[in-house]
Each structure stands twice: as C-alpha cells, then as structure tokens.
Image 1 (cartoon, rainbow, N blue to C red):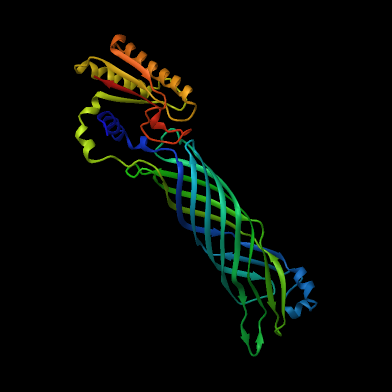
Image 2: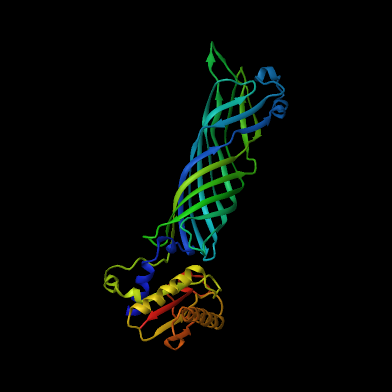
Length: 375
C-alpha cells in the first residue's frame, strides 16, 4: 500500500460512525426470529356439513347454525434470506420462513371437550425492499418491503376432544390437515449498521403475513360413534415482530496496525464527499474546505493538489467531466477563502482511482469525493 492510499484510509477511519453506514451493495444474507400472533380462524357456517351427512343434526351433535372458530396463543417465527442490493436502496431477496402457534381455544357449535392442537405455517417468499437514506449514510436506516410466494398452512390435530362417560361419547370435532396456497406479506423494518464490522447490520422488523384461505378436511364424530367428513375454509393471517442480523459480503474491514503510524499526516489531507451525480457544495463540504484553508495558513505549504473522483455509475466519459467539475468547485471555494489560485492544481481522474473497489455501474458514496492534499 502506498503512502497516499494509507493517508486516505486513515482519514476515512477517522470519520464519524454514521458515515460508515453504507447502502447494501451486492450479495447479502440475513436471518431473524421473534414472536408471532396468528389471528382467530373462522371456519364459517357448517350447514353444508350437516346437509352432507344425511344424518339428523341432533344425532350428530350439531345445530343448523353451527360454526367453527379457533384462537391461538402467541407463538414464534423464524426467517432466513439471501438477497442482492443495488447500492441505491433497492434490494431483492429470496426468503424461507416458519411460524408456529399452539391452540388456545376451539369452538364448534354442538361439540364440547378440551381444545388442543398446533398451527404451523412455512413457505418461500420473493421480496422487494427499499432502504430509505441508503445514499445519505444515516445511522439508522428504515426500510419497507412487499413479498409474494407460496406457503403451507398446517393444522396438527386442532380439535375439540370429547369425553366418554357411562359408555357415551360426547361429539368430537377435529382438523388434522394441511394446504398450500399463494402467500403475501408487507414488511416495515429498521437497520442499524455496525461500523466496527463493515457489512454487518442489526435489524428489527414488523411483518404482516397472509395466505389465500386454506381449505382443510374436518371430521366429526357423533354421540353414537358415527364419523363424517367435510371441508372447512380457515383464515391464515399473521402479525410478527422479529429481531435479526444481516451481512453484506464484500465490505472492506477496518485497517489496523501499520496505518496507525501515519496518524499525524491526515491533517494535511482532506476529503470532501458529494451526493450522486452532483458537483455542488453543501454546508458540510464548505466546512471541510475551510478547515483545509486554515491548515494551509498554519503550515509551510507550497502548493495544494485538488483531485476529483467519481464512482463507477455512468459512462467513463461522463464521469471524467463530473470529476473535473467537482475539483473546480472545491478550488473555487479555496480561492474564495483567500488561497491564491496559482497555488492550486485542480484535476479530475473520473472513476480511475477508486477508494472502495466496486464493479462497474455501482453507486458507492466513498468514491464520490475530492481529495485536498497540502504539500
């Protein structure tokens, strides 16, 4: 590593933690776990079930207006995902998920007994997400997402289990079946990048997850032991809260050891960063340029090199012109602050000297910069 790059890296390392929050670019993996609320499931009217039995409703233990309903205790949820970020806030990912809730209570008109059973949901989703502030290096990055896919909803022995007294069986109602349907979800989340581990972020999410109404086979046994079957449509709507982690591959680790030896030198090198496709100066960039002008007055400086850079988004020809405009904007501000124009050398190198190596057509905030070097 040459001394110039060491100086630049040391300067970036000295920036606040918020500036190290980079947009998700390239391949990433994630995972999360938390609590899940499965809403009450209303199976609707059982009149068609009664009609299909050709048995007197009183014998089956049903009334003509009989219905089914199941409520569930708070359960748990887990998700894993692999995705790709485009560096501008947009992300695409493929997700696998699992949810489980125990039965709290089952009600079916005409049946009695103890409630029991488990509801499970698992599936695969394709998600589109957008990170707000991805190009502004916010400390906390909110994001939203929508997903669609396929899920299986499973009722494991969700039932009213009757009791046997004096040789008579109280009517029983039971669903032990699964069904796969189209699934959809909405996601609201927050990402907290960990500056000490580039690419790593903690996440907190709320998810609404639903399915088109699954249809299960239900069985009922009457007081004399006759069993009948029918199909029951149920609801499958979930509210989930998750905590997780996300890791974006390809991020550079902090440089340690030899770079520390160059610690006194960064005062002679200043970095001014620009928004994407912009060459105008913000209040923050003017402050940094003013610090460079003040440092010139305190040191023996013979000349100032001002070099403009861009990231790899856009064509090389356009980026060359953009880097020149950025360098000239900084040089003009130095002159306004009292630095003689003859002491300043301003040039642009386009995308030819990347601070953070990236593929072509990639937006990288740390590559959109002007270097001010006091010599």
